[in-house]
Length: 63
Image 1 (cartoon, one colour):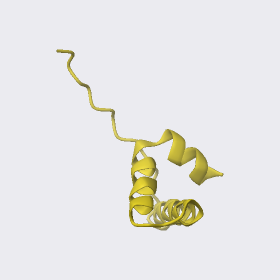
Image 2: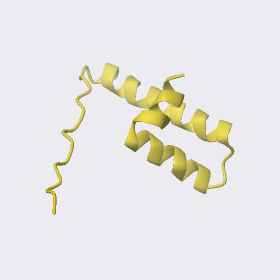
Image 3: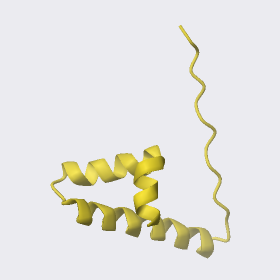
């Protein structure tokens, strides 16, 4: 479920999902790859005793 939400809401996760689709993976395969990537990130955070911080959004000046 986290991978589904991430693919819909997170631009980085969506880009990863789209990359996997472009590689020829089916929807389910791309979702499993995204889920595995998220688990790998969580494991690294636990292993290194770090917390996740979201990068600040880029501010675009209006033309």
